Amino acid sequence: MRVGLVCPYTWDVPGGVQAHVRDLAETLLALGHDVDVATPADDDAVLPPYVTSMGRALAVPYNGSVARLSFGPVTAARVRRWLRHGEFDVLHIHEPFAPSVSVLALWSARGPVVGTFHASVERSRALLAAKVGLQPALEKINARIAVSPAARKYAVEHLGGSVVLIPNGVSVSQFAAAEPLPGWPGQSGAVGFLGRIDEPRKGLQVLLAALPLMTSPARLLVAGPGDVDEVCEDLSPEVRDRVTFLGQVTEEDKRRFFHSVDVYCAPNTGGESFGIVLIEAMAAGAPIVASELDAFRRVLDEGDAGELVPVEDPAALAAALDALLADPARRRAVAKRGSALVRRYDWPAIAEAIVGVYETVVGTPVGAVE
Image 1 (spheres, helix red, strand yellow):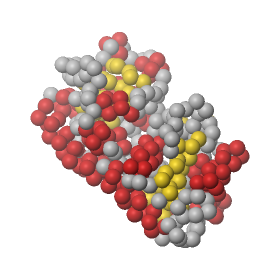
Image 2 (cartoon, helix red, strand yellow):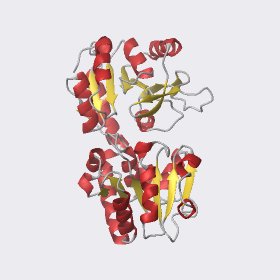
Image 3 (tube, one colour):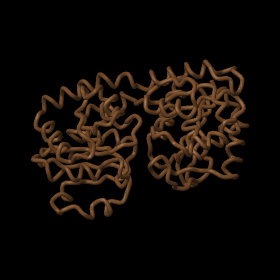
Image 4 (cartoon, one colour):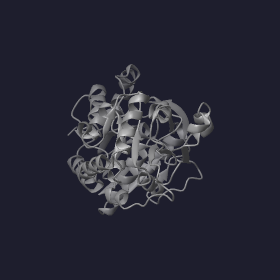
């Protein structure tokens, strides 16, 4: 099957949607499908052979964060040319509402279309208003996928109709086989954080506030882009000395990162529809302490596969980290349950479910919802 995948966010800045599209593309290629990805990307970005750049992106506020999106007549022309030359059996658009390559591809689509919804936001008046203008394009979506119940609710509220729930995937074998980074986790123990360090909803500041409240001398290993000086400007020297910043890491080093910590911490404050980072940590065998968000609770099987703590509560977070660091047997038990649970998210199984959706729409007329 010839599949066109559309990613609205720039390829050269890490993110959950980009990772999902990349892993889906590579899994489909391994299964023998022909795949091309359309995405924004900077001119000097090094792209895989299956990715086609639709041009540079601009940073704009979107969905409670700052996203790098590409829009305008030049991008629209590139998208139309990509679609014309691609002759895809099915076009799979991620975040069809995103004001970027996704909306442009949807407007120009002429064949079967599948839309995947990743976002989880409150009911949006702006989107409901925009829906009127977008309605002709939205009617082109033959089948809808959501990666989480929250994203499914969002899609149903704004589009109506049926939405298939297929979660994010992870390459379990790659994460399980990685080796720790040199010198980690060390004798004093280590807690890990992965995410954009200056994005408030990722919660690093909550974790930094918890660090001096801990009785454990564990170090904090932080991976992700952002301004380190800005994040650390209010930290005491004692706390700053316990924190190591890796910056933006490669996919290989991300897998190694999870093996370099005794506990992975996800102190996010909200805006999460799934929690791909949690299944990556589980695939690597890292025990988890996470905020008690609905999405995280579901991924961690109501706390059976990880410890859940109140949102934005540094004292509770410190206590949970201390308790897990002090109990190696508990860490092993939590990691074992996570490793068993994560098998349901292995990419071959996820891709098979997505291909099943493709097969239901191939050959259907544009706009005929299955």
